[in-house]
Length: 108
Image 1: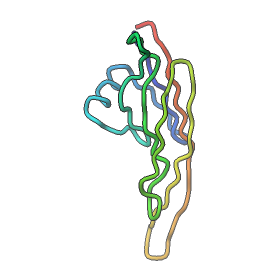
Image 2 (image 1 turned 45 degrees about the horizontal axis):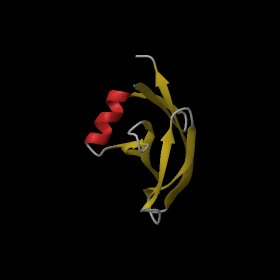
Image 3 (image 1 turned 90 degrees about the horizontal axis):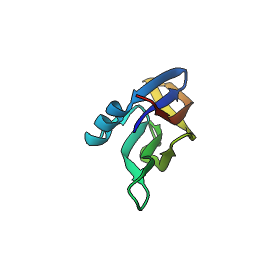
């Protein structure tokens, strides 16, 4: 079975192939604000999605905010990623952006 994941992080859109997601899972890597953990399958071994972690934010006071979810074929999952950055001793910048993921079956 082939698939792709479309990820929109703020204004940035990317498509990840099955091979790219397999690499992310095998090497325990995060792609932006998402980490792909493993495949979700039923009792017969049929894959119906991918288990993931969402990074809900980073920066001063926002560490360790993760949420587990299962991205299923044909469904869309979204979350807000908050951040706090410091550009200088008095230049604190708070913000957030929406992350949207869709898991799509493909022909090849």
